[in-house]
Length: 110
Image (cartoon, rainbow, N blue to C red; front, side, top):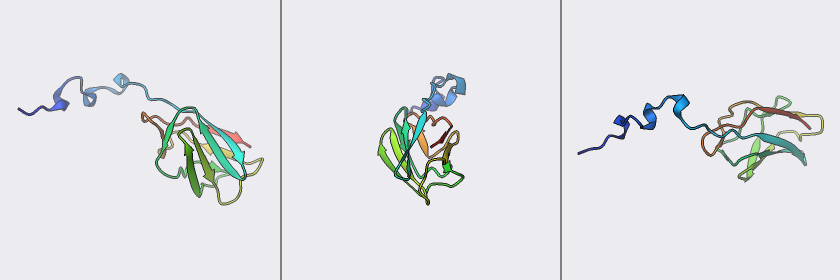
């Protein structure tokens, strides 16, 4: 006898989106450190790749380091200085919470 889990009415494939548990949304705070942007998150996140949609003055980052589970550093082609602003758009796919949620959109001027 072969069991097919997807035929069970309680299987996640049969649940409507409103029946799924809510995903955690992280918030981010930006700081300036020696020409780089340090982002601190409210909850642990997973970084899969360079978040190219996160811009400073409209310019995408060139590199990143994932310092801790709640902090990453972004490097840009030109040093980030006081007066520049960072834009973190909604639903950046490269940075997710551990349960699949996103980081909330934010803008910060240094």
